[in-house]
Image 1 (spheres, rainbow over the protein chains, first blue to last red):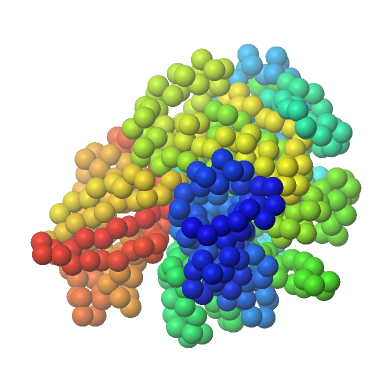
Image 2 (image 1 turned 180 degrees about the vertical axis):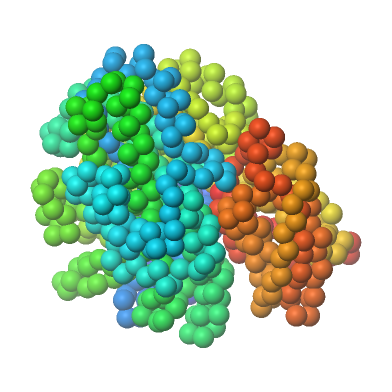
Length: 481
Length: 140
């Protein structure tokens, strides 16, 4: 494969690599990560580079791995007039994302109550295949969630007003159009509000560490003050509602591609022009799913707060359980970037990649405009996660984007053959991590060895300058869907 | 007929290759593979019937449509399926089917991982001397 290192930790695959490439592809990776990057990533990111209206480069982040359509870790910006929107550049789990909440509790205070906490949360946040949530919705209230997202949660007692300031776009993406959502999507998602899901989705009680290079001043401003402070991380998305919207539009975009004369190298890259009726309908439906995912994570937050309040016999406001941030990593958004000195609107697709706006970005407000937007990196349940912030450099280089997790290196079935879920649970308990899973088979698939080294991928984005390291978060207890 | 799991095609998702002497057998094998990702199939008894009647632009699309319908019913009706009676019209690319299974039971079905969707990624039904085969990737 033709590739050249254009800067430290940045690799370029030129347009000559594949017929039809409109722009070069670029991969953010260390020598080691690049040498071990699976061939599927190269094939998929160069397929993305062939899509109509793509601008700059087709990027892949260091946690990238082979998916379908876009690789996981893929980022691409499309011209709003000549470009396309593709469900395969967002993923079926629309607005899969991560949220992080602080507490004023210490590891010492929480350890004796971990089992009680995890049992309580496991009961109040349904996890796994086919589980229903506790929030009863009808068509009207569900449509309200589709258009107002986390705001619905505030109106209905699941959120503090201050929570909304700590969610990407205040948990309410404009342009949501419930008329673009099928009856099937409604029926599939209506009883799943406040549920965790399955696969790599989790809910984790974590303790703070500061590695070398972490910016403790920024950490302090975000409410992450001391090593050993307890924080909580949630990783999930729009559940069956979003999955059905992805399914519906992927099927209907086959016809749209014929209509508009678009050809792609992979049927999973099915797309429609951004301004076409089909493209607008998908954006409207996608925004409904994105808002529903923000609401889902907020309802889960409310359940967790109640469990902590019960375990510590204190009201939530005395436990310091403030939202640090909530950010999507499967989404498409209209943003503006500098092309040849001209600020130009584009539709940025991020699939397994996180928005990483830097200080001064006009879309951020308050503290975040001063320090940059928090970036939440969910690692594996054994090796830990990271809190980072976005940078100006990310806005200049990668369309304001960075990594989203550690990135898988091993298939689920191979991981499952290497370890039994019950053994993994025992090993993790010896490491001081309590884990409760909806499925033992599902647990084995998420073993730490199935992922890249999260510290290595984070080091790469920190060195390239598209994010800045703030704190490392080690797992104490984990609920796996 | 039957299926085998492909271990190293995709890291985060579920890839399998399915076989069938007829298209009906092939589609049945795919349905079984899909639910074997979510539960222990031998524990799912055929107690509930669901009728499926769909058509598509091509036979490949019909397979994705069939699996998508099963995945939808799994969430909307909370059912796992283990048996399939299928009749395919491969001129019209349409099928009528009865999927049989039972309501999801955590105490009985040895639950595994949820399937979010059937993908078109690399999907192509191929004919060979003994029948048909196809490679499918499910999003988990």
